[in-house]
Amino acid sequence: MQSYLAHRIAGTTHGPLLVALVSVWMVSTHPNLNAQTSDVGLRIIAVDTEAEALRIRSEIVEGVPFEAAARERSADPSYGAGGYLGRFPLASLRREYRDAIRDLDPGEVSPVTPVDGGFVLLTVVAPDEERWIAARNAGLAAVARGDYRAAGESFTAAIAAAGQFGPRDPRLAQSLNDMAEVHRAGTEFAEARPLYEQALGIIREAFGPKDANVSL
Image 1: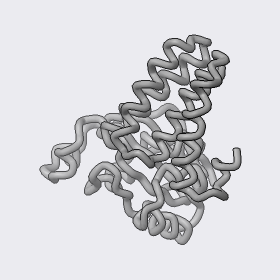
Image 2 (image 1 turned 120 degrees about the vertical axis):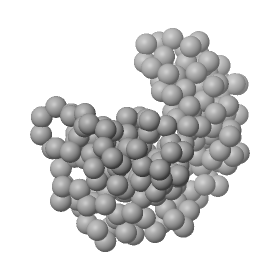
Image 3 (image 1 turned 60 degrees about the horizontal axis):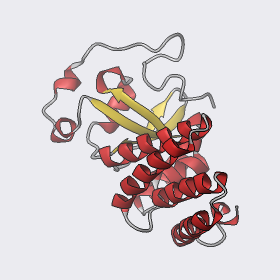
Image 4 (image 1 turned 180 degrees about the horizontal axis):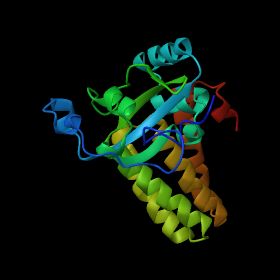
């Protein structure tokens, strides 16, 4: 199946991304739409068959996190980021995506949507989660340039943001692990160990002791 990442915004699969004119849909009085800002953050899951998309959607409705399902099942290149595509102007989204998220509140999963021979599920990312994503990405960028002080500050902010999702949320585990890595890089092993242990405990509770993340 071809990648959905390359043409996720414009209504074409070839050439540069195109920004569409503001449509009538954009000025709709639908309450869910008006609750969103002019920009929207999106996660995506892309699969080959409708049957697979329906199975994944049922799992998400029953409680599987969208981002976990994206990492395990999505064919889109964004799978490694839990299906996170980024934040885009609503007017720039291709029609199929606009229609799919029209009635969604943040965190809800869209209906199965056919797109270019495959099938996608979408979810609107809540502002709280985008703050966590931004803080974590800033930390990762600081690590990449070797600025561990800045990385620690960003991962501290990410831990605070993730704490809003609850004490057993996988995003908190990820941020604790990120901070532990910063301490390990600075040979601060006494500080790193309890963070690793806390992160591991959260993952065990969220996914079970046999999950691939636990065995790493």
